[in-house]
Image (tube, rainbow, N blue to C red):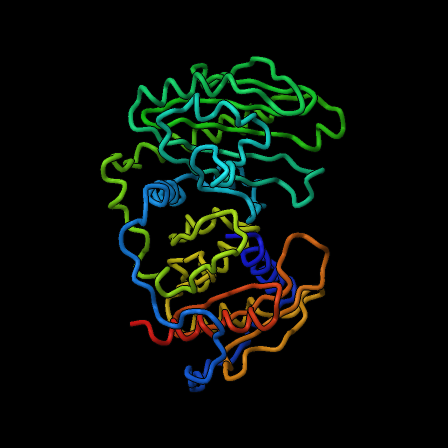
Length: 401
């Protein structure tokens, strides 16, 4: 999802904790007021659920395969408890280097020009990422990526060839990992960056660790980078043993929806900017996109969230209507940077906000609603548009079985 919806929702999630919204003292929920969906202003947006079956093409199928990794790869916070701050605008699922696709975050450090040549049979990949502090200058960062190949031989060859990639900013020197001597590792002393490539079965694990604080201070110490890299590999390998890649000739059979979550969500409009393709995730997979993993995990657990769709709206399925209302109440409070904005006419179960904070890539307006066991959030730079999106999302939920 583009930074906007996830980012603003993360702002709301944080606000719910820091402002102590009084959720523990809230009264028992009353019945939702009736809504006449025929009178809602939905603009150009569809108001009925979509039917999503097989992928529309091989690129979509490969992206769906990449998204499967989200549910099994370790969260950075599970690798190192300090790595709790994610970046929602980061690319997670990725394919080969092409003008048609967003680049993997690996290529913030690595030159992408030879990727396609070095990995000719690459199927799809997924990156997890987090930092130890919200302020980059005080943090160290981990980007842990897994690349899927059709066979072991292709993975081994790709790991060798990919490790020859050039670096941006500074040349890298060879090094090694004590616990994984079979991995190829290189480091940049001035940039305080360590990168490793390790083939395991049909997978290649590319782990990048950078210590921004040491870089700024001029301190050269690769021990913490080697430690977090080895921890990342140790946490990733067991998850890949449980993951069964889809055979290449079966990729077009991968479901593109999960329990009709995307069919219940607003379709992402053509022309919307985004860095991640639409998807439906379990809680573990959804947390890969969280801005503050610990707080998001707490909120999901309290509400019994089990599935999340990231599409034209962020749609959360909770354990019941009471939990959905509580999640809505806790996460829709005004803050210093989020000011109340007009809600859609005829939609009482909604709250809208205008973002008036630093320019961080967020869209200007965000709106939220609850319906049954669902909570949804949408965002736009135009007030009328965000209201229409939310009204359409309500209509879709109201007409879903």
